[in-house]
Length: 375
Image (cartoon, rainbow, N blue to C red; front, side, top):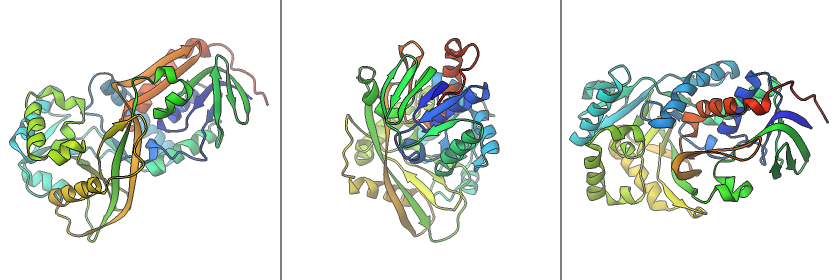
């Protein structure tokens, strides 16, 4: 088999590379070891958290936003320009939001009084909040397979349940035989150490607890909802000097949340269920035994945050993603081979913008007449 571009990994980062390549008229083969995407790309909140990114992440998020909307329309999956609601329940959190508004502007960050906050989400005591209207939401469990299906209709060849044994210049050796290509992108998230261990020395695996709950009464929460805990997780909030006060207060008053690396947030699925979470722990190999106190921590914090009454826990799971000091790994271990990983848990937010940049960088290797189809 031959291709102009081989993409190893059918998560959202790999699919984004295939998307940009096929739009350039290239022949693309996507290889994945599983029968379908089962990793971080389908285990997340479905939250494209654009506004509170910073640096390269902000660039990628902004560049990728319209691509999300375009591919959602083309592939026919649910996407919503719902924005993000950031709830402030303490004065230091309110100060952070005011500083964010000053830095990003009133169109990007709209400050809200408590009644306006409660019209968007049924939260308990709040002193205000902010709406970030530029952010997006999707259902990752539907979006990722829909994108793969749509790409296959555009001529992308998928080789599911196929292990990659080696990646060299011009050829990918797999359990189903070799695939020759002008260029290769390896996008396997935290498993980069399985293919290029020398590139993964600084990467840890971050595991997180998440749950899906069903309230006993109908509620509507159109935007994603972030809290003061979330301010500690997104670099864009760092524009505020008051962020240090938020961090110190949480460490002092909520040591259990600080120890769990809690990012208290939620999104509502199209069926009305809420996805809630999440915690963060880091290791070379994640602990396979989930800590029940951390699930209980999330549930108790959600009860304190939301006025929704009783609810049932329908699903619990652990997400895993690559984590490193630099939020992006983009390396070229050999000519025509790029290794790409989002090492910060913002793959849904940045994938389409990051992939656009990488495919542009690959242009010299992809120049010329596309390879003819082989067998």
